[in-house]
Image: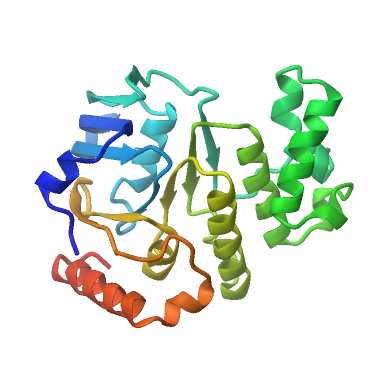
Length: 266
């Protein structure tokens, strides 16, 4: 069911706070209002999924939190600090593969640690942990060209985690994958988050994906992007793919889908 305003006010602690955030883009004589007066509080170590139709501002919202886009008005804070630019406290995983083709799997995952000047022992410890968590032990010395699309995405996720950000931002990372690979990675991402919690904001078009992965789901309106509704299904914290067949899951999917259809959000 949708979260009420009173319930939302009780969300503490707040790691990310957006106050009256609007973003306008200008091009020549035209202007687009991408986000309109967004108020949002994201809990520490919450897995938040954001949904909405194409062009509703989901990616703009993510980019604003990442520090890639400056709000035209309003304010974004992370742990009380204003977001004015990109920073190491936030890592982004995009839909397109972002692995470095000139580096092996282990070199990709350990890249952020090496940039920080960590010792080889420290780098290896981090790489070992995340290679195991994403199940790529046998491919640690493989080159990206030797990996499948799903494996490359695992490298992306492991590299994002290995950077040790406070916030991990994911922009439809599984959107280009086939359904079976996508579901395996959904399960692995949920397991990865449970093993190493941090604040996650996950953009998706897929309601089933949002329900499976998220603690909360935000539904946005068509442009200009506003928050239409917030849903917080009462699901078990730990769940596997079989939960998608559970009556609670199916009921929540139907309720949110009907809500979206009522506002022509498909």
